[in-house]
Length: 73
Image 1 (tube, rainbow, N blue to C red):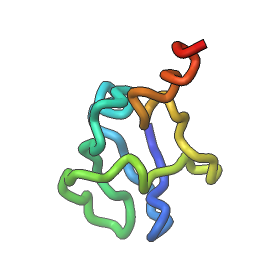
Image 2: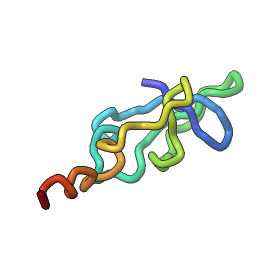
Image 3: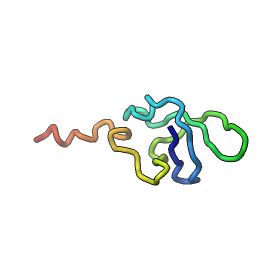
Image 4: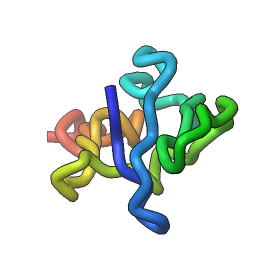
């Protein structure tokens, strides 16, 4: 899966999708896609990534307690 880094606009190939979907993981391993050379895998903060369309990642992928307020009703 490819995401876009907010700061640079470069595409990032997500190596392990489980890290992306796990809200307890603040970072994931990815590989930048720019230039002609294959880049080394490096950690990326999930808060700095977006879908290629520019849409933000779902809160359920970023915040482990995003629905806690519903439990208090």
